[in-house]
Image (cartoon, rainbow, N blue to C red; front, side, top):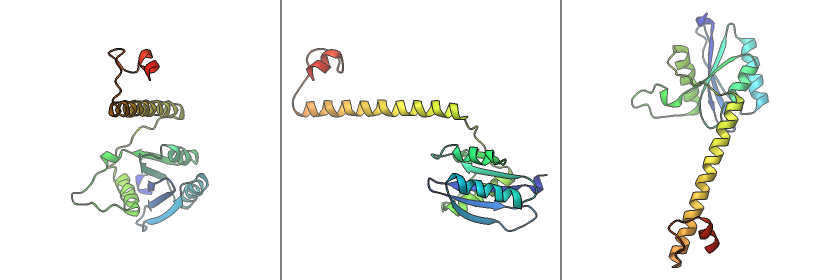
Length: 175
């Protein structure tokens, strides 16, 4: 059954996706680019499922685009795996990276079974993760603002002498 599987590597970005399909039976690979929008992705998956015999598997690197693409592809009835970027095999001296090459390599490595997949969270787990990341970023912003204000006061020769610690109630009243 594995010899009838079409492997599709996707190099996904914010606005575009470069795809490369490796077909069974020695057909030449096909490459194309599409917008990273739900409707074109849906058309691509449906077309590949209709045109090919056997199973179609998609894969793409985990990255800042999240897991939306995987959910779209699975919704259409195809298998989609997300690859750990740090665990993709890389030949020594192979430094030239283009979207077309990356998509081809993902499809080729997927066909050879050389990729390590990550377990994608469901939408509720992803929401909690996003909330935690947002809180952490906000706390870092608050810390930076406090440091910026402290350094401004220090440059102006203003020192808080009402206690040992800054950013207490007394310190805020002094400000």
